[in-house]
Length: 128
Image 1 (cartoon, one colour):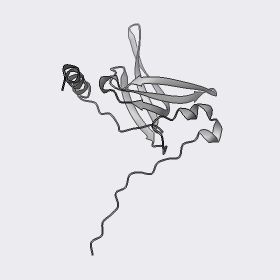
Image 2 (tube, rainbow, N blue to C red):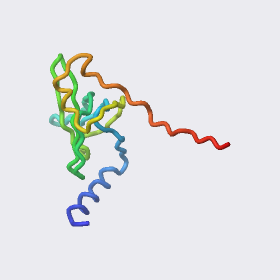
Image 3 (cartoon, helix red, strand yellow):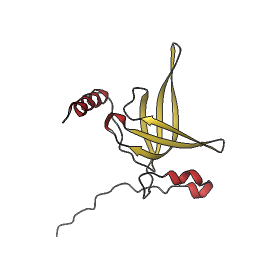
Image 4 (cartoon, rainbow, N blue to C red):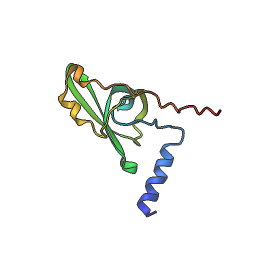
């Protein structure tokens, strides 16, 4: 492991103390709580939408969440290990075949729906 990897690993471990990151991927509906500081006051703002991309780059890991606001598509890029990202909740798991679902930008209405992924259920083994 080189020095940069050691530095990133140490800071990731420090960030994850007392926190947990959910397992999510593109197609999942997320609710991201962001800490916003305005002057001396702090508040938490919630951004809910579909994760359309995830990039795993150690401390530089990001994910993109898209939602419709007044029939206008809004996308935000969030850093996974940012101190301003307070909490990430997975609302629904989506079934998609691609890692980056940028094609959803051009779809409207029912065409933009993502089918829900069934829970990962392990098959029961019956011994006779």
